[in-house]
Length: 384
Image (cartoon, rainbow, N blue to C red):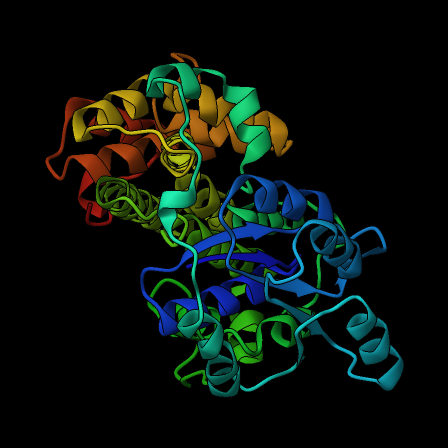
C-alpha cells in the first residue's frame, strides 16, 4: 500500500511511520508537513490511505486537504489525527467525509489495530504509478525541480532549524515533545550514560534527565542523526544498502569529531552535527532516485551508483542553501574534505582530523601534522 502521512511534527511522523511499517513492512510512505505538499503527493502517486493532522503550520487545517481529495475521490480512506476529540471537531470533520479519528496522545497498539483494516481492503498496487518517460540522468540533473517535489528528510530539517534558533526549547519542552518516541528516548538515555557524556556515577533513566545531561544542542543532534539514518523513504534494495553505508560512515565521523572536541574543549554538539551532515548530498540523491523510480522510471545498480557519485555534491550544496545552514556549520562540513594551508581554527582542523581517523585507522603524515597544529600527541588520538 501507498500511504500519505501529512503531519508537521517530525517525532509524530516517525511514530506513524513505525506503526505503518509494523502493519506492513513493504508499505510505501510519503511524508508531507503542509497541505500543499500533501496535495502534491496525492496527485502524483497511487495513494491508498491518508493520515492527516487536523492542525498544520501557518494556521492551515487538514480539512483543506480532505476537501481537495473529496472533490475527486469519494472512496479514498482518510484518517484524521487531532489533539481535540470534542464534538464540534468531530461533527465538522464528518461533514467532509473523514473516515475516522485518532486522538493524540494514543496507544500505538490500538492505532495499529484500527489501521489494519485499511491494509486488508487495499486495492491499489505500485503498477498504478505513471511511467516517467525520462532517463535517470535527465530526471536527476534538474536538481531544483526534483528538490521541489521531495518532502526531503523532514525530521532532519526540523532538527536543524531548531538547532540554529537563538530561542531553543528547554529540556522539559523537548522531553514533553518526544515522550512517546521510543527511538529518541532510547538513544538519548544511552548517550547520557555513555563515556562521551557521562559526568557522574549515577545512571540516568528518564528522557528529561538524559536531555538535561547531554544538553539541548546535543539532544537535537541525536534527532538529526536518527532522521538522516532513516531509510523508510527508500524502498529499492540498492538505495537502502547505500543509505546504510552512508549512515555508518557519518556516524563514525561524528563520533570521532565529538571525542576530539571533548578532548580539545570545544563544542561537542557543533562538531558532532557537522560530522552527521557530511553525506547530506548522497542521501538527498538517493531520495531523488527513489522519486524517479516511483514515477515509473527504471535504473540498474550501476546507474544508481554513477548518479550518486556525479550529483551528490550538487544536491548537497542546494540543500545547504535551501535549509539556510549557518556559514560556521558549512565550514565545519567542508573541513572534513580539506583545510586551507593557513587554517588555524581548532574546530576546522579537528573536523579534518576526525575524517582522517574515521576513514584510515593508520597514522599518516597528515594526521601527525594536524595533531601538531592542534597541540595534541598522536598517541592521544581517539580510536578511528
